Length: 293
Image 1: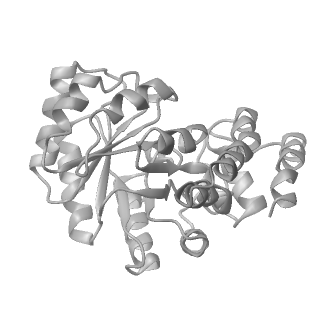
Image 2: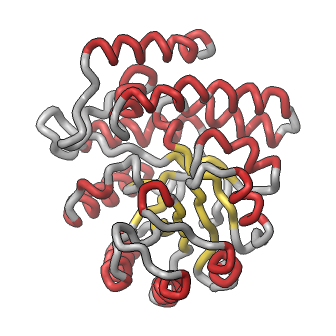
């Protein structure tokens, strides 16, 4: 898998009793493939990886690989705090046929940059799959420094970084280390167009669950050289992004996906579904997407 384009970060569909919903996951995969996305990313932050058992994670990988049926590459989030646990999970999903790995930084207990480099190097050394590092300091409490990016971009298996710091300057600094063998992806959906403009390679985009055609329009218009249309599509994501403040992640995204694309069920407790008043407010916010469908 070469990292490029728009790769949705799939939410994990659950039934009303919070069990994995295979039918809904297959429906979500099909809707995204029909929208023309370039790959699928499961078990990310918006996929509630932190609320899943290892058995459930492997079942999600199995279903996604089967549903995609080789039509698109599938990237799997395998991050954990311990290096050993990541390597073991990587072996499992590699054996199942995954195309790439996304590895979030260690979380809860922030490690030094030297420890972080050794962590990723050991992970890269132990797999034959391309690895995308995942930087999201607001959730993990630590960031991948530019020195680590410079070092790790040279590793033969580490092929990219997804930056969800939400800081455009951060992306620009990372792009200094971009090459044909190391991609820089926006992980913050408000920066998709700007990352492409700065020379980045694409985005892992959670909003694509709900509005895949809007996200794909940013990419398609940019590739066609229609910058005003690409910027307009980027701006069209703002109402959905702003609406995320209405609930605990990813409750708003899941409700928006239900309203605009396909049903994906609730989040895992303790994250609660939106109440009736908030749901109504969200529907009003999302009216702009029906107008622009």
